[in-house]
Image 1 (cartoon, rainbow, N blue to C red):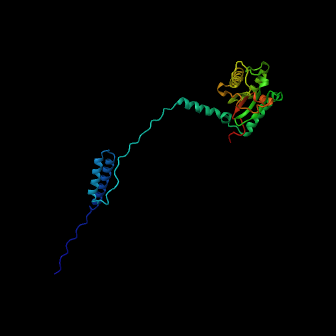
Image 2: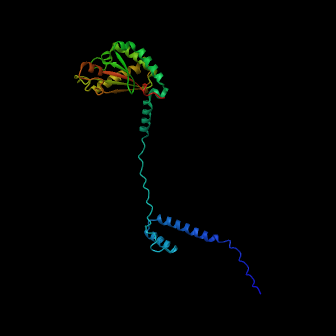
Image 3: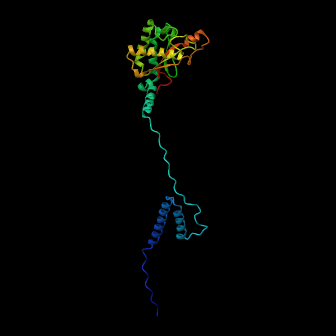
Length: 264
């Protein structure tokens, strides 16, 4: 007589619980480790190490050899206070230094036209030897000769030279977005008098030209600056009379007005 087959066992649909339980155990272990690492108490860290060994039946050879160290605190260095006044002044200075090129976005041809216009207006003064027009990396330079505008060792503009100063002012006024008036001298020692150094003399001369520009013409005070360089920026040798004569001058610089710095 044949044996009866035992009924088949129903499939187990809860086997996933085993894997899920292992996952939960590992996740719990991770969080316990993170918590332990955040604590300074070394005793608790050692207890966590022992619990790892016992929970996962780890032998000494497989045990974690590295010590669990607490996470170091990040030290935040205090930032120095920002001097907003200095930041604003620096930004304003840089903005002005870009000069006419930035404001008008001049092309090379436009710069040449401006130079040509100034040269035509000042041609009589050039022919008379009162001024020279040159170009530097800073911009277009109108060079006023000392003999034509000042007495020796004096910063007072000659009365008979005031019309010439006016011609220069009218020639550059339409293009004077940013100009600098620079005083220069030779290296001769000044006689006893008002000025003790060539620096003071050169700066006073530049200042007097600026006063004429601002007092008689529609220049913006914010667009004019002055500088006194004394004998320290010569354009010729001070070893000869002709060289010293060239070094004694006032340079009116139209900042940025040069073909080498125009924007594309």
